[in-house]
Amino acid sequence: MKISRHYSDYHLKDNENIESRIAVYEDQVRGWFLDQARILEKASDHGAFVLLLIVLSYIEAHVIFYKGEDSEGQSKAFFREGFKAIFPRKTDNTDILDKALNDLYREVRCGLFHTGMVRGKVILSGGFTSSFEIITDASNSVVQIQVNPHKALNEIEDHLARYLMRLRNPDEKQLRSNFSKAWAMRHQN
Image (cartoon, helix red, strand yellow):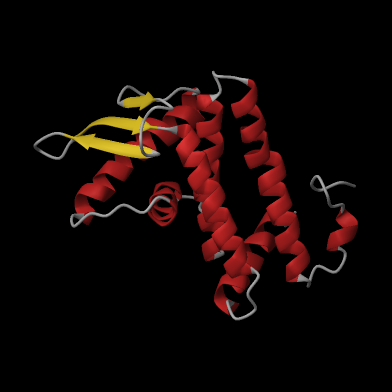
């Protein structure tokens, strides 16, 4: 049975082989999501929301594999942690960043995943210069979230490549152990 574009369940017969699991994981993330996003990006000029769905699905999933923990009941915290790792922002005020990420979670992630649409503060455009820009007013309240799904997809692909490089390094024992824990959670019946 095929478990990704290039692998079948035969490749995971030896479930102790982390290298095989990493290869399958990469093939699934790229083949099922990122490559499909690129195909859509080339085929349609109206795919921004689907691109954003793919980008957002990567964020929380990455933290699950990175930490080796289930995100159940911790979705917002995992989203914030993943966002900070994937889309680092330079700021001296982490309280404002966390508040903005809570709004981003509610307006973008929950909006798309629960209603299929972003909420009112969000504007998507391929013309924005950064993947995510959070615009605040004088009281540091979020008034607008500007999203460039194309740039966000680029950053997700770059992040995945860096993560996989670390994951394939045998010296990254804790990272590999956490990945294996998440893999096992995913494949429990």
